[in-house]
Image (cartoon, rainbow, N blue to C red; front, top):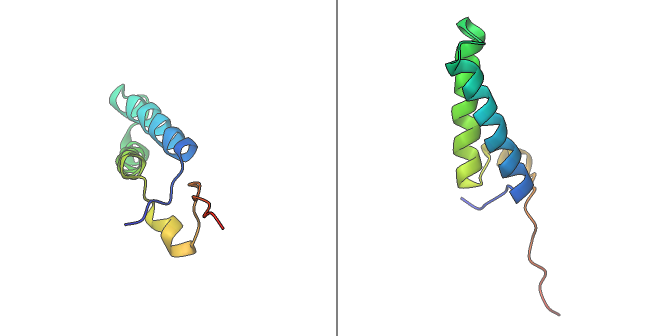
Length: 71
């Protein structure tokens, strides 16, 4: 897997996952919405830590900086 997420993208995903996890575990969000939020939390944490988003790969999108080659 080639990394396709930049530092800012990873940071935002991890922060959102922490917030969503806190909402779920403090019982602020419950029921079906809570379970969906928990699943998104896991996905955001996983993709944030491995720097790879499968949806980005499918659509050919990347937020990581590419190294410039010297002429």
